[in-house]
Length: 626
Ligand SMILES: [Ca+2]
Ligand SMILES: [Ca+2]
Image 1 (cartoon, rainbow, N blue to C red):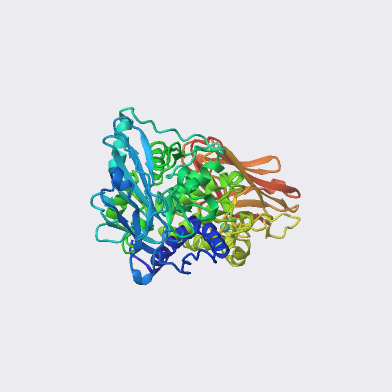
Image 2: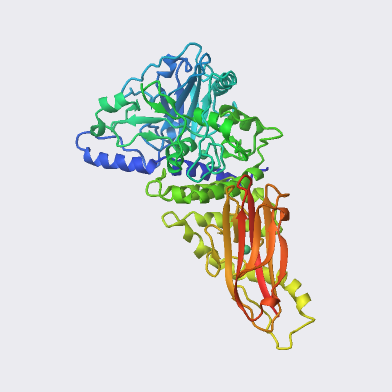
């Protein structure tokens, strides 16, 4: 894909979104500021600049894969000192290191989080020297709260990879000897020495999430780590251990919260799992006896073994694997090798459009499915529910991945859907505090008048006119279209009555025209959605109900999942998986027998199997009388 100005802008923006939304920077900086005021008289902390240098370099110590190397602090410096200093205690600049260790003889896995300190400083407490098993295989992963972390120092000794040699770094991510770790883990598992624990079942009845579930991933999946550090108000850093927590005296000299790395892994292990009643896989912390901790490597091992289709693996348009905003197969494969993902091939081919489609459909529906749990759960963003956080993160990811340009799903009207999704995504963003049900009502309204009226009228006009013209009832009937908001462009109910998330502008299932459609089901779990409207059909009229239907089923030969059209209790039509098609098809039903009655028209979508996904999507309805 050739680079475009839009892609360049989105790349920059994606970094900001990732950092801002996931780093907990707000929480921590607020706390630092408070303490800074309280202790200003005695301990003047170096106030972080308003715009801290977002690009820092981490110096890898000697022999990084040995016990002594793990216990030697990594040193943070500015990549370009002219852009300002880098301070590990500044939550916007913090870099994080996480090692995971396997004993190939026993298959035992443990975790060790090496320390990061400012270059030229000393740790708040000396790192614990871990005891490693004989022949231990050590993988190291990095995360970063700024934009671009560059590795320097003894990178060759650690087989460290931060990007294509001589090219741009991945950004917030790097690793040392990760492929060797995963190979050793796979070998141990194959030999029965290592058992990867199953995912368990979430409160929503679905398997617990993994870092390769489209319900969790964002534009740069499988990035960053779950490492936490303790920081003093003087800016010195220590490993987060029980001993250090006690020895350093708690609140008196410590920053009030640990330094955290905004990451997909942290989101999964610390927020999604607790909200959904799931438990992340943990292993002993070699720096903190008795403590069990999570790690990126554990997450990826579990995802590799248990994530069901569709499996999210790093796509070619992930901003961390592009090079000068161009896709790079080499860089994509390097990244994937560091997180135990298959190289590009016939499967897992990195197709941006497929990734966009799965993110928009599977991702949207899982987030909606989990709303009862995530809307009452904490998120990494202070004052924001987990549901709101996930909704905005998904919308930003679709934008940052250029999913509109990629054309996520073939539709009858590609131009309309492209512009529709483009407007839909940013609209959802500003609703940070409000409940998501209210989402883009206001901004969607202007579209309503123009688009649906003009586009819906001609389409629907043709069919009924032909049949109605020859026989005008003797009593006379004023021709009219009776349904309110026939293209769902109001973006809300009423005039339609609908179950949650049916009236949708996520672009996950693109509309037939305009920005909105009625998207029933698509949850990959047994689920029923309805959308209905009451209408009075005048006596003496012939009546014709038409609508555009898109059925998207993973099992197109099945008849288990159904969409029924009912007028009060009279079933007018039933569709099923067998009506699957790549785009919309217009359906027309004769309602003349209902003349003189007031009835409620109800579309009911039943996702019955739950073992395979089905979506029924409606748009541009019309009830024409004549
Ligand atoms: Ca990410
Ligand atoms: Ca529409």
